Image (cartoon, rainbow, N blue to C red):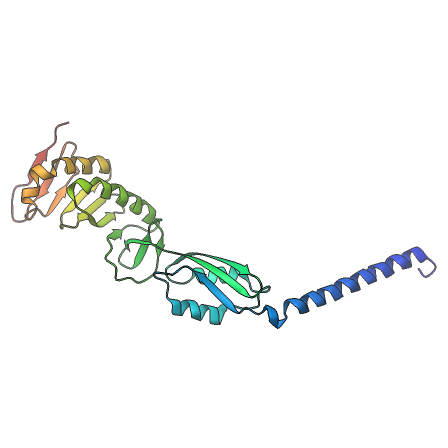
Length: 242
C-alpha cells in the first residue's frame, strides 16, 4: 500500500474529511447548547377559557427539556394535548429563545354516558364542567353519530320551542329523546326524522293541552303515535293521515 501514492492520497483525504466533519459537529453541538439559546419564554396565544393556567405553567416547568434548538417539538405538542380541555396544540419556535403555543380548546356539546363530555366535533373527552349540558347516551364509538342526530332533531323541534335534554341510541339502534319539558319521545330504529316531523306537525293541536299528564309518546307507528298517560287504562292514539 505504501508504494501506491494514489491510494494513500485517497485515504488521507478521507481521514481529513472525517476529521473536518467531527470538528464541524463538535462546533455545531457547542453552539447549539450555548446559554444564549436557552428557552426564556413560552407564549400561549389567546386566552384559554377552560384550560387551567396553573396546569400550563406546571407543564412548562416540569416537562419542557432542551433549549431553542434542541427542544423536542413533537413531544412538547403531545404534552399540551394531554391537558384537559385541549383538543389540539400547535407549537413553533420564535427566534432566538421563545416558543409560541396555539391551543384549540374542546367546545362542549353534551355529557357522554354521565362520565365524559362530547365536543362539537362529536369527539369524546374527559374534563369537568358545571355548565348545563344535554345528556348523550350511546355505545362506544357512536358519539359522533349521536351528536349529528342531536343537531338534526334539535332543528326539527325549533317550531315547538323545545330543546333536547337527553338523547339516547340503544344497542339495537333505537332513538329516544327527552325534551326540556320532561316529555319522552320514542322514535325507534327507522324513519326517526319522519316520525319526529309528524309529531311536530300535530303537537300544538293534540298534545299541548295534555302535556302535563302525558308520560311518554311512542312514535313507532306507521301513520300516527300513542301518548301514554299514567293511571289511564286506555292509550290515546292520534292518527296522522297518510
